[in-house]
Amino acid sequence: MISKKMVELVKNGSAIRAMFEDGKIMAEKYGKENIYDFSLGNPSVIPPESVKNAIFDIIKEQPETEIHGYMNNRGYEEVREKIAFNINGKQGTNFNKNNIIMTVGAAGALNITLKTIINPGDEIILFAPYFGEYDNYISNYDGIPVIVKPNFENFSIDFEDFEKKISNKTKALIINNPNNPTGVVYSENDIKKLAEILESKQKEFNTSIYLISDEPYRELVFNDEVIPYITKYYRNTFVGYSYSKTLSLPGERIGYLVIPSEMDYYEEIFGALGVANRILGYVNAPSLFQKVISKCLDDTSDLSVYEENKNILYKALREYGYECVEPKGTFYMFPKCFIKDDKAFCDRAKKYRLIIVPGSTFSCPGYFRIAYCVDKNTVINSLESFKLFAESYKF
Ligand code: PLP
Image (cartoon, rainbow, N blue to C red; front, side, top):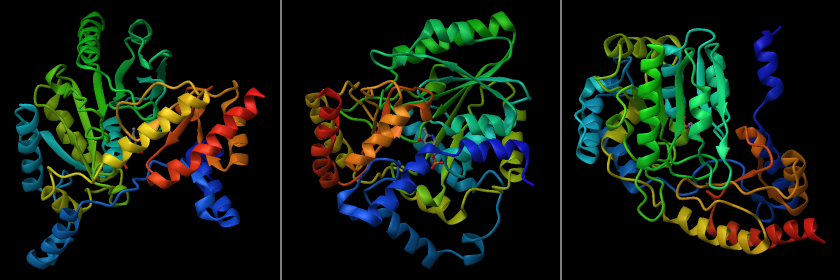
């Protein structure tokens, strides 16, 4: 018999994965080109040529025992050093290898962080709408998610609600910039305000409150938007990064975590994170791909298609009467449903061969997510369906 906790987790499932599976069944029935599957955040563009070259070079040049062997649970020292210096060059920070831990993607970075800091019953603040897996990751360590509601007119942070939700049990908050599912970017002013509130609450409760910045979409921003590097504004910050989206390598499971030396309890935390990588069974981040990304630190896939897709889709949806905040990054948008019941809405969208994900998956019912990391033709061909779907609610 499986555990009671797993019974619940299996029952709740992942709506995103469920929609993706539905999409596959529909594609078999009606033909792939006739289904507009916007369910999953799987990059549609190939990795840059430099990734392929790096794989071949490493395999040709380096001893196989080293390429495929065990290493320090925190990752190869030379890779961590290279990443630290690369961040310093871009952000004016002062990191070295002892501020970097290689992780199994952003998911691995979040899990080792939460494993390291949560005592059962500790509260972790989340800003709705947010990536639904955060709830599961927090539950892995018996933490309690506490949800801050958004300002619905632009999906910015409701600072008043945030302040109210901080208590002496608050261990951390997770922010995701730019945001999945809205595509919203939190500005430097937002980050300064967050930091100010956190500093004052730390004093009030005499605690350390950690800010976990989940940044798999950092480079995926439009019109030269800038994502602030939060360690510069608040020292108790972890930054989780991943190559899943910007180098189009989600299956390779590679990312890293940044831990500034100025953080409260830095020594203990840095030590514990390495142990967490080991005992959660990750052991270390994939060895070949640590080396691969260390040769591609300034590269990304051709991300321009996502902005093109956003422009086409956003303009058309507004014309058809959908209400939506214009995304400034990621490859998602989060329009409002025409009815309250977002699950019924997304179910009905299937009649129009549209696979979209209910907002309740992101703790924000009444909305739906479109993952437009698909080829441009799929976006263009889907427009008629979005139009007819909207009209079906009006007439
Ligand atoms: N965080 C957010 C906000 C995401 O959207 C995702 C994946 O979609 C992840 C974390 C997990 O990313 P990774 O594949 O790097 O584990």
